[in-house]
Image 1 (cartoon, rainbow, N blue to C red):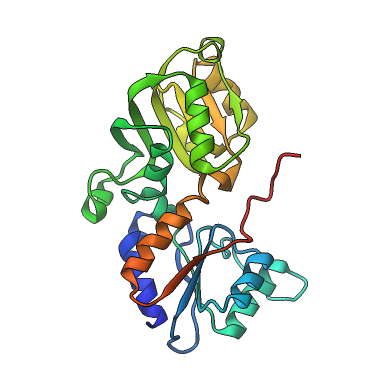
Image 2: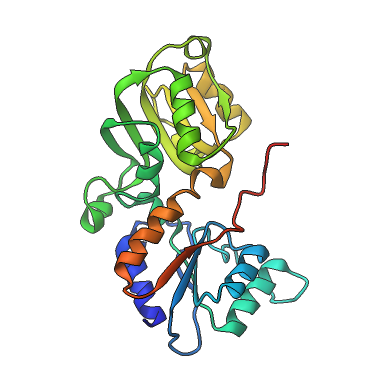
Length: 270
């Protein structure tokens, strides 16, 4: 297939009109001529290690969930790691595509996947829906997810479920005393990545789950009677790449879709 076919498939999976206004999504690096694609590599972050892996595995197309071009690029020089990546992709004629917040907002995208790791929900809706989302992807689309569990369970059970879902040994938890003592919880809010600003104004939720949040935002939520689970930014996103790989494989007949082995969150517990 041509690289334009891959772009079209990605845009069908996560329409770019769903992305946040501040985001930089879509085809970020385009080859000079149409490029045949046999292997697609998926990653959360396009680091130098991931780009080296892409070269070693002979990838023809890179999907980087986080956009490697976000703020204005002022110069392309070898002393800049991000610039070296871009120049390497251009030299090798490898397209780079980022779905980012479009993939968060679409139904059955990253936000729904993260929520499903906490258990069976009987109610789920976007934290911040927008009218144009319904035209593109239906009323379930939007940013973040609010969910109501079919059966209320203690915080310890939710922690155990989330760690298993994300394949993590550790998460960070802040909880009021009654939650720590085993009070069953039912109302949930999740946001892939960094959910602090998204959660502002959300009331009546017993548990907030995201990758990272400001210290004082965590304090405020616990003081209001809610618990918080933080996974570190990309740890609540990376597992969805396997789901996206399956969807792309179905959409791209004969194209091998791979998930980067070298992609990992920069922070680790020691």
